[in-house]
Image 1 (cartoon, one colour):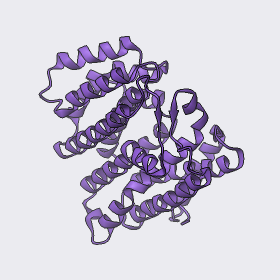
Image 2 (cartoon, one colour; image 1 turned 45 degrees about the vertical axis):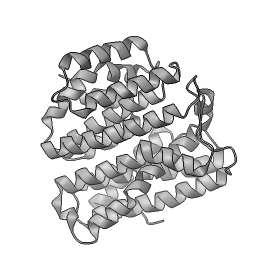
Image 3 (cartoon, helix red, strand yellow; image 1 turned 90 degrees about the vertical axis):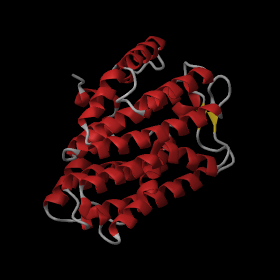
Image 4 (spheres, one colour; image 1 turned 135 degrees about the vertical axis):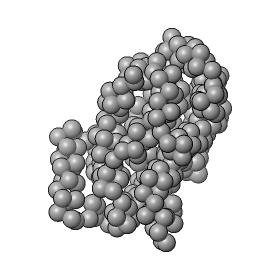
Length: 306
């Protein structure tokens, strides 16, 4: 039996806080989706692997994601063992996730057919996009984005698609969100929701990424322009959350989407003051989460519009 909560704890501080706020069956779908996206990201970010090996791992993952129900179980076991032995990362949590690949794919069978199709579709889209960026790196695997357009394309692949997937799952599990004006608003903001969170992460981790051979911030683009784009995307992300809340979405949907936006906005403020590497202390993270709970308990807006 796969320990999904344990894997969440070991692979993401933020999502380990936010995903448990979702109601079932959405929680299970988003948990499995996050872990699949994290698995693909582990291969894309494998600094110790050359470009060809990263691309091969993503191609093999796409084979497993084509239809896990018919893929030979032995293939997932073989690939999981090969990837684990190859140690694409030194992060213990990510290595645990790689080793759990067969069980992770088996767990997809617990989802409804519609949720499983949504998760697999978007996981494949992301893995394909990541493979495309691996192909654009040099032979050693170093990736350097040249323009702001490249940066936005990258953010779409690794995070904008996540926003689109979440929207599909929310609408599938809460049909009231198909109401006129609601679905179109959510879909219109979904890409920016994901892009905002990814841009903040890129700005925060710029120095660490550079040491690992990844230069996501284009050299000829002023950092202020990226900060401005992140602010604009965060405004759209806030609209996304408030649309969910205004449409009467389950509270867990609102909590799950509002918390990372709160953390991203606070982190961006900190980055503007202190520069790359600045991180929110855990006590501040918990205070923001508690404040969100108090506002929702009082029937107030989850977030203040930007």
